[in-house]
Length: 363
Image (cartoon, rainbow, N blue to C red; front, side, top):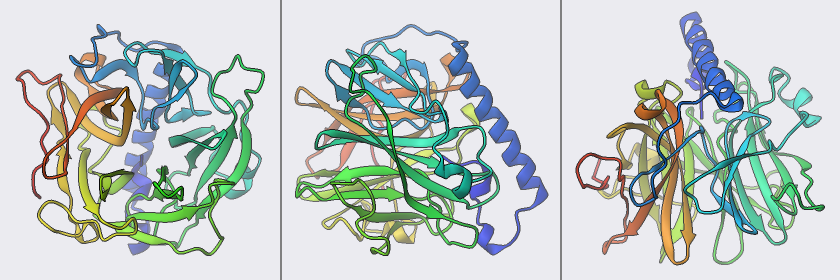
C-alpha cells in the first residue's frame, strides 16, 4: 500500500501539489477505515465462493488468510491493524485489532506516525507461533519500518492469547533507495524463511529471516532486488512445483473505482531470481505478465495477492480497491486458482457478467 509519498523522492523534493494529493488520498483511506470501524459500510448479498469473489466486507491490503482452530483470520490496513474471522470463508465477522497501544519503538523510528495506522500486514504460523508483520510509515517521507509481533494463538478467548512486540525487522530512512513497507512472509520447502517488501523507488526487495526469531537472519545480510517498475509494490511469493512465483502490483491504489492497481506476475527457478514473465522479460527490467487487470466487472483495482489451500483446493486472495456494489469501497476477495499445463496460475473472477477468467497475458 502506498500514498503519494512513495513517488521517487530520491530525484528531488516532493512538489507541493503531490503532498496535497497525498494528504487527500490519506484522508480518503482514513475515511474508509473509519467506515469499517464504525460498521457503516453498505451491505451486499454474500454469495458462495464459487459465485462471487467479493466477501462483502471493507478491507484494504489484506494479509494472507490463516487458520487457527476452527476459524480463518485475515488482517488489514487500519488503526491498530483490525481483523475479520470466518468459519467457512464466506461470511466474516469482526475480530479484535492487534494493537491497543502503539509499540514503544515506533515513536523513535517513525515519529510522525501518531495515529496507529499501520499498513499491509502479513501473517504466517511458523513452529508454534503466529508471526505477524506490518508496515509503519509517514506521509511524504521514506521514514518507514516493518515490525514484527507474535502470538501463540489467534483466538482472543484462549488464555494464551497475547501479542508480543518483537520490534523492527527492517527499516528505511530518507535518502535510502528503497522503502520498508508492504511485507509478505514466505517459507520455503527447506524450512528457510524469507520476507519480500518494497514500494516504488528501486522496487521489490527480498531478505532472509531466521525461522526461530522471525527477524532478519543477520543485520547486514544480503538484500536482493527482485522487481522494478515506476509504480510497483504489494509483492507476494509462493512456490508451485519447481518454480517460485512473484506477484506484484502496478498502478495506484486508494482511490476506490478510480484506482489503477493491476497484478503482474513472473517466476524463477531460484528464490533470489531472476524472475521472468511469460515473454521472458526480467521483472527487474519492467517485466510482468498481467495476472489480474484493473477492471473485473464490478471489482476495480486488485491488489495484495495471497493464496490459500483448503481441503486440496487452492484459492487466490486479494483486495479490490473498489467494489461498485459497496459504494466503491475496498473489499476482501477470494477466487478459485488453477495451475495451467504450462505452469502458470489463473484466477477466476466469478463476478464478471460473462463466464470468463482473468487469464494471464504477456506484457
